[in-house]
Length: 252
Image 1 (cartoon, rainbow, N blue to C red):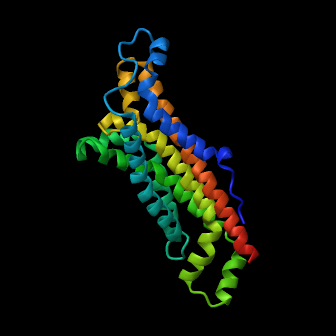
Image 2: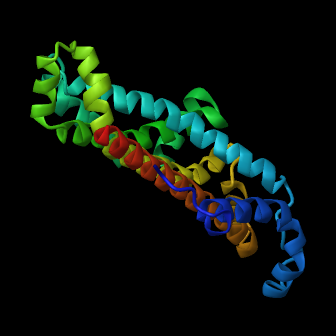
Image 3: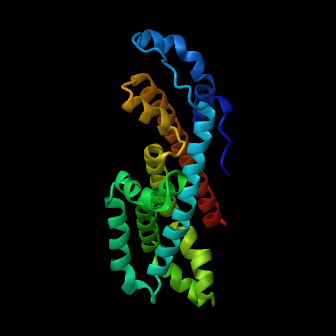
């Protein structure tokens, strides 16, 4: 059984509190940024609330990562089935090509076709996040011992039962690692979505770069970095709990 960590040693809790405190308290850091950048008339980004930008950023990451997980894991499962193996090289190549295109290029092509705002950004992030998930799923299913499948077949399990009760639980840590990589990448990449009018934590970064305002860039970058840390620690905790759950299941 997994022992609960004392709250004062909970890194995820402290990171999440730091992220929320910075988003809420950024406007009060005006004197600090004024001292660091005395040449700036407006050292704090004020076009949008930092809390609103944080929530919009999280929504965009979730809106792209959830379908990416569904497509990536689904495709990985399909490509490891006997009827789908012949399509594996084609699908892997197509997904790899999707990630080689810079997100900015995808945005530049998609925005004139479907309009500016959230939709082209979601498409770019979805394409960019597929490869790690697909690779993690393929690698995870490849680690399942053949003896485990054969034993399940000997017990009379159906193909679907073997997938859900044997293959996916054993492959879960590697699949989760692929999802973790994809989400962390998308958190950083989502900042670029502000170039096509989407509201994200990249908004102060883009405005700062175009207006030569380093304070805005730092404010946006700090929040993006903290959000990535919180997400990474959340996945680390999920991986630990998954490991303890699998260990308990094996012991039973």
